[in-house]
Image (cartoon, rainbow, N blue to C red; front, side, top):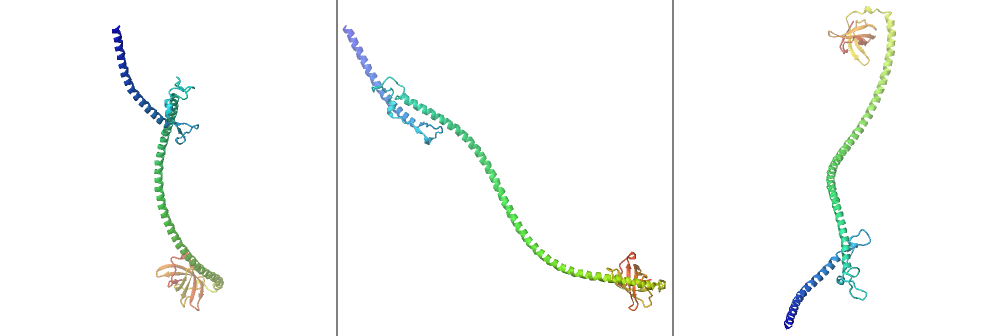
Length: 311
């Protein structure tokens, strides 16, 4: 019996020693577990403070958001407190650590979804920005070309302005020339008026000459009854002293013994060349001159002063 009791005492003593050792180990682990739990609770509270709580509007932006606020006491309520103020065996629902962590998890998931939506929108914005950048590069190229064209246009415009100024000067000179020409025209108009008067006077003289020729023709008819054209001696009859090609007649000096009469055709000769023929219109024996009409059908060359007249 004593031996059994001794064994039991020894066993109890060993177990006591083991229990003390285990308690010492558990105490160290308890401190480690407590420190770890405190640090975990602190960082969970900090992390929760970075999570946004979505509002009722769909377009949530950061400046409109609120953040989760967790008190340290909330992280200690593993069990739900009963109506008697004592912890119950319930570990879920309002007032428990589980509810707090579920709320953090739900809002973290929502924030993650918003982050993904923002990432997608950012990718789209990046693509749009790339297209906009390409468009901007093209626009800058077009702008550069436009600037070059504008510079060329300004140069052309400056040259055009110079040409316009030059042309304006030329126009001014031409206007001066026009005024001068108008003055010359006025002067020429006066001269033309004077010449017209002379022409009128000449036409009057022509009419008078025609009437005089008619008179001569009448006198010729009378003379033809009194004279015979065959009575004119052949040979030199006179020499041309005046030639009027405008009125187609000549004036000639006749020899004292010339017997020419009107309507007699005479030959004009220069040295040994035939010039043409004339027809006597009037004979003035007292002045020893005769008038003759140039016969164009026989003309070889224009009569000149000094040409001899033969019958």
